[in-house]
Image (cartoon, rainbow, N blue to C red):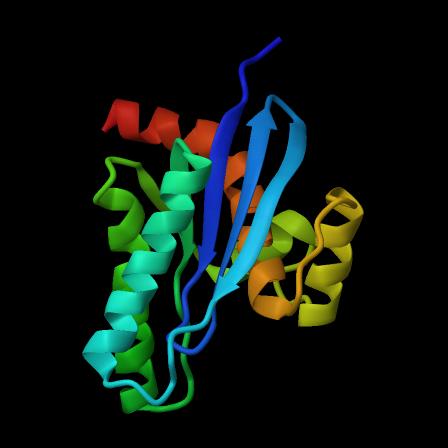
Length: 168
């Protein structure tokens, strides 16, 4: 029997940043925890980013994942929105990396395909499949469900990613 690897999935966002923790042992996935970080919207940007870093760091400290996965962002809403989201994504990558965790990145379409079976799935379909795969997961909202989906995607692709890194 393979030993379990604890994974944190992070769905970056400056208003709502979802996180989800699972354990992967071979093909077996187990739900550990899920939540959403909501930095104060009225605070200056630097304070919001600092709050995001502190809260994600606290989650990592509490649940001690061995690996992290972050969704690559696709923004079609304009330059300013993309820049703000990029800064939140940087923090979402920095928090686990600062603790020595390897951080994988996955495109939204790959996450959806890994969980639902199609890369153009709707948010509701992702939530339904995450709940089907992890019935104990009690997530509130799409951001937390997406974070669990990112962790599930990483669990499916991590061995291939490790082989690619080893051969590079």
